Each structure stands twice: as C-alpha cells, then as structure tokens.
Amino acid sequence: MRLRFAPSPTGYLHVGNARVAVANWLIARRHGGRFILRFDDTDAARSRAEFAEGIEEDLRWLGLDWDESFKQSDRLERYEAAAEKLKKSGHLYPCLESEEELRFKREQRQKQGRPPVYDRAALKMTPEQLQRALDNGKQPYWRFKLSTRTVEWQDGVLGRRQVKLPPISDPVLIRADGSFLYTFTSVVDDLETGITDIVRGEDHVTNTGVQIDILEALGGRPQGRPGAIRFAHLPLLTDADGGQLSKRLGSMGLRQLRRDGIEPAALVGYLSALGSSRDPAAATPAELAPVYDLGHVSRSAARFDPAQLLGLNRRYLHGLDFATVRDRLPEGADEAFWLSVRGNLDLLAEARDWWDIARGDITVAPQPEDAGFLRAALDALPPEPWGEESWNAWVKPLGAATGRKGKALFLPLRLALTGEDHGPEMRLFLPQIGRARAADRLARAAGA
Image 1: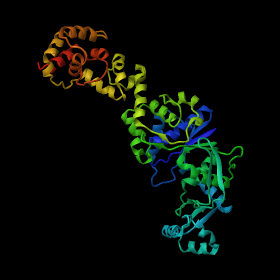
Image 2: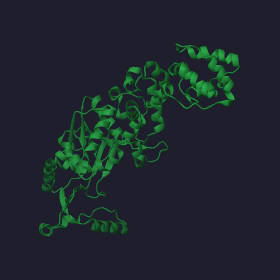
Image 3: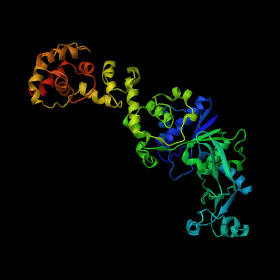
Image 4: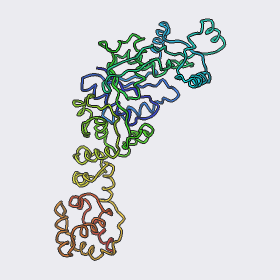
C-alpha cells in the first residue's frame, strides 16, 4: 500500500487536515505500506517555504514520519508531458472566453432554468480561428472534456458512491499563464508515484469523480478493476454544537494547540477516534496503528469538541511519569514536585504556575476574619523536614484545638499558602512550599 498526505504550503496545519494526515499514516503503518508527504505547491503566488517547513515540524510533533517527500514544483515537466498526452487524445481542449464572458453565459443559463454548466463552445473553434486568436496575442486556458457517464466507486468509508459528470463543467486544468491546477497535478502524481489508496475529506467526493475520469484518460486502471486506486472519504468535522467547523478552523490550528499546551498523544488519539465508536485514548501513532480501522468510521459528520480534547489531555497528563516530562518542567523541579501537581493540570504549561507558587514570592491577601485562626496555625506549624505526612500532622490537631473542620479549616490555609482557593492536594504540595515560605505567608495573611 502507498498512501499520501498532500498539503498545500499556503498556511499551517489545522485539525481538519491533521486528521487526514493521521488517518493516512495509521493505515500505511498498519499494513506495512509507505507514507508519502507531497507538497502541492503549484500555486506559486501563495506557497511559501516557511509553511512547508512548518508543516513538516507539525507532523513530527504529532509523531508522524514519512518514507518519501517531494514538491510538485519540481515535477513541472511531468505535468507538461501528461498535458500533451491529453491534448493528443482530444481530452484537453483550448478555451479563450474571458471571465466576464463566462459569467454572462452562466447568468443566461440560469435565467433559462438550466444548470450553469460550461457549454463547450470552445470545441466549435476551427484550427484557423484558434491560430488567429493566438496571433493576436490571446493565450488559451485548457479544459478537460469530461465523459458523459456516471463515475462509481466503492468508498472505504461512505460505501457505494457515484458522481454524475454531465451536470459538471469541464474543469480547467491549465491556466492561461501555463500554470497547472491541483485537479490535474494531483492525478498525475497519484498515478506516477503508484498511490494505491487515497484517504481525504468528504468535501472531495465530487472532485474524486472528476479525477477518476482524468486518471483513466491518462491510462489509470478503471474503478472496479484490480489495481485501481481505492478511495475513502472521511466525513467532515463539525463544532461541538454540530455547526460548520470549516470557517473556524483558523482557531483550531496545530500551532495554537501546541502553544496552548495540548499534548501530541492526546491530539492524535482524539483525531484517530473521531467519528468512530471507539472511545478516544491518548497514545502515540505507533501505538494506535495496530487498531486503526476505517471500517469503524461513521458516515455521519464527526464533532470536534475542544472540551473533550482538553479532558483527554488532562487524563493523559495525570498518568505521565516524571521521566517523560522532566525536560519540559521548570529548572529545579523534581519528581516529588511533579507528583504533587500533575493531578491538577489540564495543560503541562500550568506546572510553571505551580512551581512559581511553590518556590516564588506570591501575593498573599489578608484574611482579617480568620486572623486568629491563622496565627494559631502559624504557632502550630511543625518543624522540618516535611514529607507527605506533615499536612495531616499539622491540620488534625489544629482543627481539634480550634473547633474547625471541613472548608472552614482547609480553605483559609490553602488561600494563605497558595493564593488560590483550589489546586493540588495539600498533603503533597505543602512540602514543596517549605516551612520558611509557609510561615511568612501565614503571617502575612494574618496581618502580622
């Protein structure tokens, strides 16, 4: 099996195309196939090297590697050769209408109650008419003459699918400036690089029907025959409320999720389970590959819920050992600190906040209504060394002596020691603060 992920380097990855990349990688690795990274960069005006580098960086962050990589801009001569083949076979024909002329034709057809499909008027040009236009400086663009058939295929997710070609305008494959469009270059590459399976979003279904027609015109195996390329289309993502997500994908960029502190294992696990009956579990791509199966993906749209992703991220962090996160913690943080805070984290970056609370100088708000209690707590503060038993050894007799229990006992102490009304388990976190800082904070909270 040979699968490919083909982003356009006109921006960075978002969750929609990351999901496609993950699916292709998992299928390739599960079946011992090859995963190819192809940059569809024929849009020279918008494609940028920094975006390509950023996409590679994001894929590596997810834990995805690739067996081959190439850019379409390095294969222009192959597209020229394929275009000549289609011209000679009569599948590719020149057109000269301006955009204004095409718009007028569409409007006229709509007024007549007919679909706004290109009327193939260019096919009526004689060679002499075309030559006169060329001599007068006109540059043609080139359309592919679609078949008058219905293209059918067995989709790996959606089941039996068909696209009727007659209601579709012949697609432009080559612009007047000689540049190639994705619809064409993608087919040439898929055919010439031996792609066996194409997995992409459901928004490409109609495009797949057109591309199958082009592919077969170039000599590709017809659908249903042995060796034909197999297609699978993942249903589109919606937001948590079932609304359209595509317009909001900018806020779901991988770079922003990384900055926010989402762990790659949580994101990969979530994306791989979206739209399936499998409960999402944070895991590396290598761990997920043996169990990933397109047959488990529903034909219905999948909901991308940031709150669910955050919950998965939280559960993943709570189970990480110190060795896994050591290099990403603040300098000086040890295993005892990590074990004291990990159960309270949604994002790893929050560990820095608790490190500053434990070892830094925090703002302590006075608690005049509890001043007497806090002074008693200060007087009862046990000597060091402190361990996990020190909290109970301190607060139990303190509660008995003051008659306090529950929230009345614990909340004033937590507020004084951390400046927060909730947080890590104090049994584990108190030793991270240390006696000197604890005494100073209790005194300040008591107004001393």
